[in-house]
Amino acid sequence: MNMSSILTKDNILLNKSLNTKEEAIKLTGSVLVERGYVEPSYIEKMMEREELTSTYMGNFVAIPHGTEDSKQFVKESGISFVQVPEGVDFGGGNIVKLLIGIAGKNDEHLSILSNIAIVCSEEENIEKLISAKSPEEIIEIFEGVN
Image (cartoon, rainbow, N blue to C red; front, side):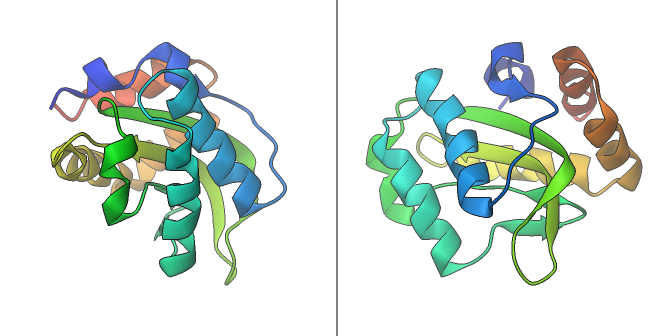
């Protein structure tokens, strides 16, 4: 699974200001819908997933994605990336500054997740992603994984 094929400039939103985690998840999902990776129903499944268990991963990162039964709404694998420099409260004192929405066809979400986990395990990368001023900078950081 090559990150550069699923994370393109058009999938990246920078410097967003969001008030609630619901708003954050909907925006992250809407990029996936607009870019043709998923059907609109996938956003509902992202919200459901968040109700079940928070997709906050630590280090200012959340990875919203659909529930197990949301596969039918995925057309092809893709990632959306939303940068929220001022942060958005995900509850429990967890502040999210980077939202990475995942739509995985079949079991591809697992390899996508592991790539993201590698990138986000480095605090230096997190800082770069939060302060990035262009989509190219974001893509470069993720391409460093492969």
